[in-house]
Image (cartoon, rainbow, N blue to C red; front, side, top):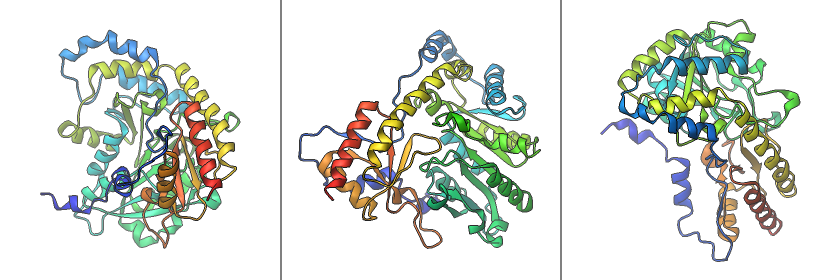
Amino acid sequence: MNPLLARLHPYPFERWRELTLGVQHRGKLSPISLGIGEPRHPTPPLIEQAITASLAGLSVYPLTIGEPRLREACAAWLGRRYGVRVDPATQLLPVTGSREALFALAQVVLDPTRDGATVVCPNPFYQIYEGAALLGGARTAFVNSDPARNFALDWSQLDAATWARTQLVYVCSPGNPTGAVLPLAQWRALFELSDRHGFVIASDECYSEIYFRDDEGAPLGGLQAAHALGRNDFRNLVMLTSLSKRSNVPGMRSGFAAGDAQLMKAFLQYRTYHGSAMSPVVQAASVAAWGDETHVQANRALYRDKFAQVTPLLQRVLDVQLPDAGFYLWAAVPGGDDVAFARALLAQYNVTVLPGSLLAREAHGVNPGRGRIRMALVAATAECLEAAQRIVHFTERL
């Protein structure tokens, strides 16, 4: 058995199930879950139609590199969305969802034979980052988000010795669970550190198309930041995104990675041996999805309306702000015990939220998720409002 498996922490949902064993709602309220960030808006008809029209593709083996028309569609989307030019032949690779790609990229980049190989993660974070690091034979270091600065990351939390050992940095912008978007100044500082120490940056951007403030524009992306700073070769940078949140197709498992051509060449080599090529049916549906913005705008409007109604309601009892982007609310709870709050809420009002401490690690003397809960507003507006009303009633009785 691979001894590195013993280094893995329990996944947050697994840990939450353990913490709620024996917790039962004994009233008559129907269950509402705000715990899992699974998009639940309708799948766009154009995607369903593309799938139906391409079923003949099931009779052939797909190529790992993907069909040219898909790579071209993804590159064209990057050009429209971020104003960057990416070569679809050498700087872009379709992947079966960003989760798989985020994990696999670490296996490409990491050299565990180098002493103290380190992967830097934001804190709190998407747990795949840590798992990829540990199974790649590396150690982890964390940069805590700062609630006093809109959950910004301060790279100076890590000393020079840690940066010298760093081989990979995961960035999540917009953040999960904070919703914070990395501004250009933080990108500049991170690029300077990368140039100095030679590490690779993996930019997880799967929430980039869910945002709330038109006047401030769409969230800045990693390739866009590099382009703005004259780094048009995207050296040591790979961005990863998917259709799951953007187009409400989490079951389709479709996304892409783009950036540094040398990294993408190595990534393709790795995925030729490990990883699944995307089904031709999924590729056809993905071409349709990346080429259309109407359904994305409609999806964004649903989230905007939902957050506009739910956030003020919860602000009556919780310390919570409208995020920059994404579909989570990241709220501080009274009393500071996020696990106790979430367990009692489930028992008394049959609403599931995720304790923030399960999404973070103790670092620099603090767990930045402790005392917070993550609420995924993915259900219909009426259901989210009902959950919010129950949370208000529960909190008022504390």
